[in-house]
Image (cartoon, rainbow, N blue to C red; front, side):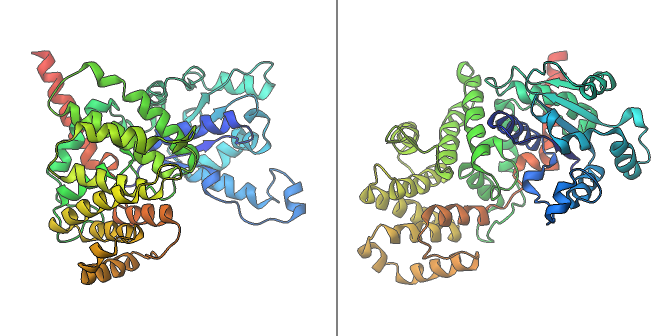
Length: 427
């Protein structure tokens, strides 16, 4: 059964509105919920006359919006001084639309119980009558996010009020330590993993997916994540990384390393976050910090770091180092081939080819040829001049999602751990 779908009513007309909406979007998806947002669903074509008609049935956008709203399981309105002035937001708030479209698709819901919530992201002074009437009709459904911008952990906590009412089975603690423990257990016992080659165990593939991914911020597919979502994720990840600094339990050092690695991975996917003040932050800080924590012997974690670091050194705009990139890519390529992860070995070799290490490649002619074939089989061009597109395209294809946090198994395991903890405290 698919997860509940939230219709996100908002405006992107200002930078502040867009950033607030992006943060809410990321956090709702971290809960495992589906979100419909118009920026991801282009409106059907319309004529100039239809556009002039505004939010009326003559405009194709009217049916596009009202249909999406009716097919959703709940509506979350991102409220700000600018959003309440937007014509189509007012359409989405119109009781006639809600009653006619939404209730027609949900005959078991009575009008006063429509799952309609308001996320207040900025104070609204001199509100219009529509807004006052809306507040009166939404008692207990107003989520005040106005003070959460600089404290990312508050956003999921506030949104949980809605999740508890709309999809209680998806309401799980998002504490990073708790998440890590649950996820770690499931990785070790995984029987299947999306994209896993037959030559690799599912548990190994799940671990590599975790190490080469973007951490707990994006449990779904990575291909559609945009720049603003990456920016918010880095901000939020830095916030949650501060939580476990005073705790200790087996595995805490790995989690601390993963925070650094996930931050570096987010920066490498971004077009704006990687280079700051003339410095390549992942290369000069994140990866160097990680390498100081690691043992010399290569394993799944070090191989994943070497792959990302080799790519980072090869593509750095300010501090490229092809010689070091060769060493890292060669080491991880050998390791991936050893454990049967041929697609990752192929990516390593394709990147190694770009370093110009012909001597190394001459000893691996057959493997190199197979590497190009493997990358082409993923629907990608191994000769693509855009290495960022190639590198992340391969990773997206190899780890298509959903991630462990988005599965029913994760929720079941998490609930089991919660129940066990309650029993222990009860004793």
